[in-house]
Length: 290
Image (cartoon, rainbow, N blue to C red; front, side):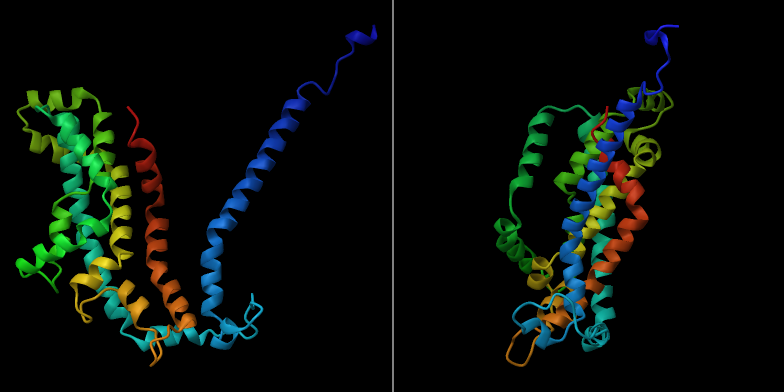
């Protein structure tokens, strides 16, 4: 037997080594990006565990000398934390539920119905996403003031019933990818488009429903401008309370208490995302597929 006919055991080892190297590089990049995104949240936690003297020290104290766990209890007890959280929860839940359903209905219309100028209207809808909130802030306040809705939760109800352009886009993309045979069979059975939407298309869209609800809830929970403008102190949200309550008599922010309150403020959003992350990811990944 010649040397060239001997079997080699290294055949295929090079591709496996290349795959392992690529995975190692990918994991390294993912870990670095994870640390980059989690860094501010970690610094927020460390700030909430420090004393005011450590925050004012120079050079910077990266770690607290003595962990101040009582900062979280002080931040919780200094204000009506649960009351403000309840206000935020009510507003966010009302808006997220209504805007998800209204956006689904509008997206269904753009995806499955035919009408003159539909593409133009859809382009205008997408163009409205480029308008910053500050542009419409003053007109919005004047309208609600004329209607007597200032210091009530009615603005969030009306905003929810008006749909949101980005969510309409998500639903439109999802509904456009569903088979035409579904609605054709329903029409043959005598169903109208309202029945088709509620009984066939909406139950099929649970991934986008989940993603839209989480997005809308996050928008409202993290909104500072609208509650500060439209609501009184008693009806205001946790976002406003965290930013405006933890101050000294001279008006200087108490950074460690603000940081501790901010950590507790973020926890509900993290829990909601962890519970709904599968549907959220599925909704974001399938909304553009045909």
